[in-house]
Image (cartoon, rainbow, N blue to C red; front, side, top):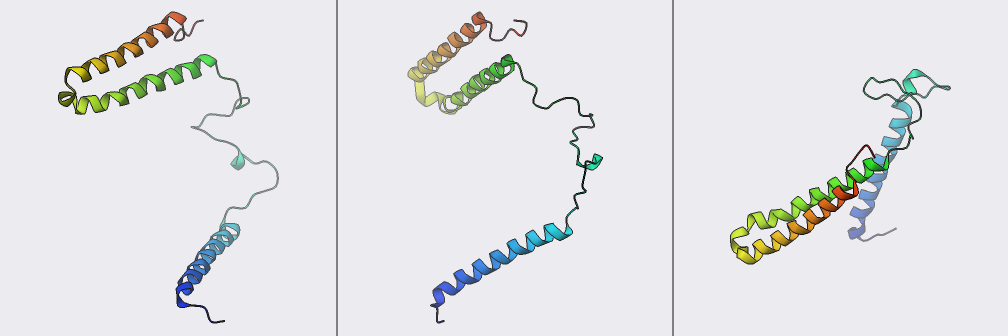
Amino acid sequence: MNLPSDYSYLLISIAVSLGFVAVALLGAKYLGPRQKKGKSVKNENFECGIEIEGNARTPFSVKYFLTAILFVLFDIEIVFFYPYAVNFREFGIGGFLAVLAFVAVFFLGFFYILKRGALDWDK
């Protein structure tokens, strides 16, 4: 078979990459830890030295997720202040009024969620 020399580098690189994959898979199979039949202490979940209690799929309160989403929302607001902080002299009074309007909208949203009780954990 007489292949052009342009393809020989491609074929060599494919062969070498498949060789690395084969060596990695065979090495993991024969050199890795053995799984014992049955349940042992070694195969149990472990986190921070705390013993396992109950099911890991216990439901969370919706208040937790609501607080997390509100945190992300108001945290992203800070990202939008960065361009203004870097170029506040170039923006002038028009830029200042635009940022003031932006902050006013977020304050309206913040007071709305306070009035609705979204941050009250007792309700």
